Length: 404
Image (cartoon, rainbow, N blue to C red):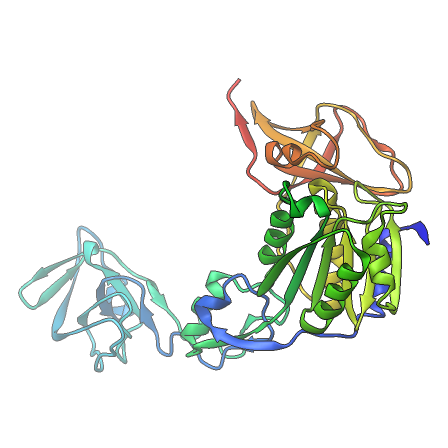
């Protein structure tokens, strides 16, 4: 059964079997932050509804101030009332001015706001020392948010500005994709003295991607126990991930446990490095993924295989890692036919960005992820990159600055 398959082949095949779709639930705006939007929301209002001042000053008719200068000021009559934020003033007559706060709506007849610092008040007269253009220091109707503007698209990650815009149109809740995952860590040793710390990486990765709930359980190396727990999980969760038990041989407990569930789709072996022994299956129309219990191999499997499948299956647009160009300080080699996940330390020295491949142990070395800040994907048709070659890298942490 173990046969290495290309990543694109796995994605295209598995999508045809993933017929389950997580439900959408409504939550308060603050609880929607960094979750996946379950709806497309259009603005039904125009903001501002009327021309609005963008600073403290005086609402004026721009044509009355066209000749104003420091040596020859224009003199306007100040009306008694003031316009506060959110209020709208009365009609402004010819050669008149009215004090207005930031956020106040311009009265009829006004089309600009002259800043306080360009004026001088003497009694009920305003001396204007600078000309001003039409709509200067004014936010026009619909400029901040217009009717039918798309505030958030279904499948997008809800960011802080989305929440602000939703509140601006009067929404208190928004529908989010209620996507739940169960992570199993297999290994009898974890029941005794060792901690399966890869579970934190997997759970954190899923939560960072907008999952609403991630449950974690530790199971012994027992096919029946693993299969029983998986069978229950595929009835309660949308995504199931198992860490461990994927290696070729007699101790493929996880693979055997999945087989007992009669999956509609199953493959064991993907052309990625590290992580080639991962298994992707579909049970009860939802993904059951088995990945290595080693942290780097697990991260590689999540990024190179699980992430694009989630994007295609659920039509999600995950936030991308920032991409920059960097010069390799050492040659990177890869095996033809495999998509390789190379950990890097990217740093800036004298204005040049460099990428240092990290040789910090194998796929079990969490150290390479902690010391690094970026990764490089070497596609299947390449054998690597030469020293000094400029490559595109993806940053998961800021670029290090070196003052040398």
